[in-house]
Image 1: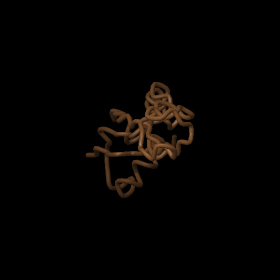
Image 2: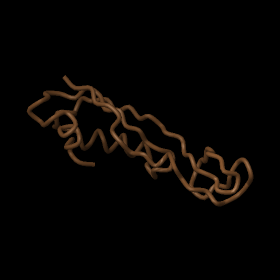
Image 3: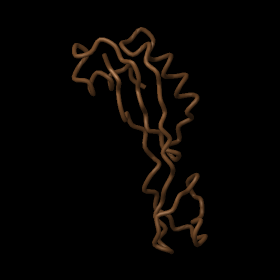
Image 4: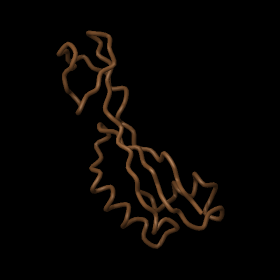
Length: 107
């Protein structure tokens, strides 16, 4: 995690903002991110930065995959799950791998 470099870039540079109030992150179920570790790391990394008082809001994104056997988009909990519709294992992940900044609240 970079020291709020992403905050600076999204808001047009460090000179454009004085303080960040909140950061909303989309975190996919298949992204391999432990959200409690992310929360702890966020607080540590943002200390003494323009985002030191910012709240971290995590928006969970469900895992999704395309089943090649039954030709449907299905929800999955983890990689290598079988298709809940047909039981097949030919799944192509197409959602839930996200880890992105959705929104910044700045002053």
